[in-house]
Image 1 (cartoon, rainbow, N blue to C red):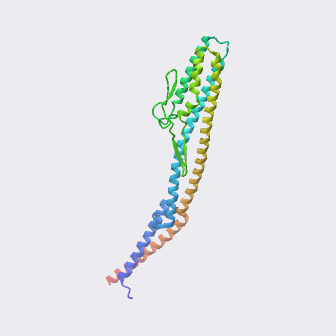
Image 2 (tube, rainbow, N blue to C red):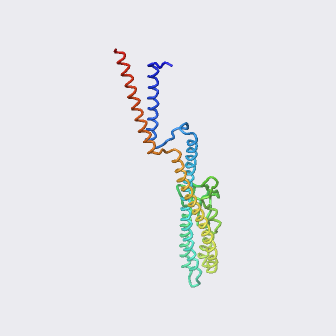
Length: 292
């Protein structure tokens, strides 16, 4: 087969283009640190890397859900602790008010103190977290507890606020106002206030056990929130560890061996320079032949 000058030139140009493309690919890998740019680079590793990225994305969303749930549990636990402490103060007033040595004026003054503490508890029960009522169920915008001086009314609902924290688990992160009402703490406090106003030490004494029972139920709710907080924390740790591992697998799938790719780049650059020199020699030779 006769090799013509045009064939030789085309082959040299093809080799130059190929070497240039290889240099460009290697240069991009060095700049980005990635060896996978599209599926054709390595179909198997590209699919694996895509799956790792999807898993990391899902886990990142779960971590955000857990963080949000943790804010709810922290705020709920703090408010329940506040309610428990106020109940303890009110129980102290009940113990004092049951003393037969007190007169009606002292019990009346104590009734005003109890009413003030009750209003503080209503304010605590109406606390908000990130613009939503903590104890309002899914009715998050209007104050869920109303006190008219004689009774406490709950106007929220018993809706559960849920957060999905992994592929198979959703948790309820709120305590509803109805659960607070079920402790009977507000009714017990109002009963104490009425007994103090009536100057009835026996009736005052009867509220002590009621307040104790309400305190125990508040403590039980706080314990439940604490258990949920522990679950969220453990799940958070597990998912963070999983994401570290997934990031490592992703790196193995798509990251370049920088030392190896730089070595290849240098070798390819030498080959490219050699091809340029060969092309230059051929063109110069042909030009001289033409001038002759």
